[in-house]
Image (cartoon, rainbow, N blue to C red; front, side, top):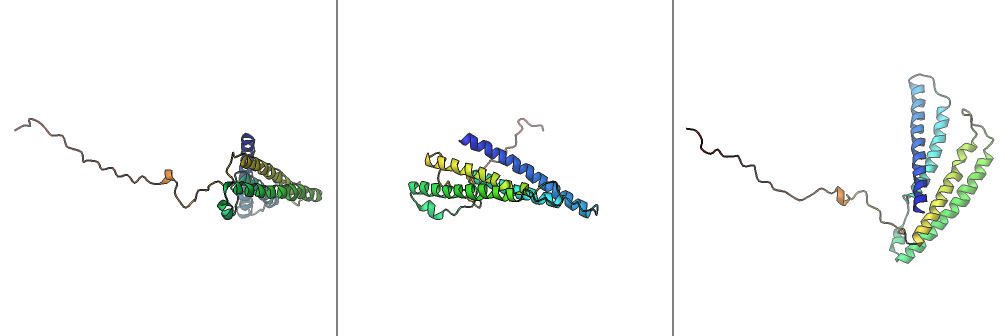
Length: 194
């Protein structure tokens, strides 16, 4: 399971990087064409919006796969270990339900409804904008199932410790050991001249 999750994470990371680069390039072209050439591009604003939506949804799925999403787990961490496992499984089941019905099923309905509505400046339909909702829902559902499996089997902690970004890690702390070196001794000449 870990290898499969790693492959999915790698795929999402590469896609997110490509989408981000395209978003920056499109937005740069939009500003350049408007401000420098005084001839605004008709397609760049619409493409930038689509890229931003896709980057947001796929980036969210990536973050969920890393278990880096915001979680209020103060009370769950106070539970005994088995209680933490039960709470994490419950939370993942709720997420799986939302990903399946809200994102996958709802996203398919939204995309199919908008599939015949044309965009004004691009040769795509609005349905292509909504396709990312069920796509990211599939990734989130898969990650949720993997997390449930790993927590139940003990391969992952239900609530792993998170490093506080304000506290330096042990490797980042400066070495406070003071080394005192003796000053160099000048060589003395033997049998000097008169």
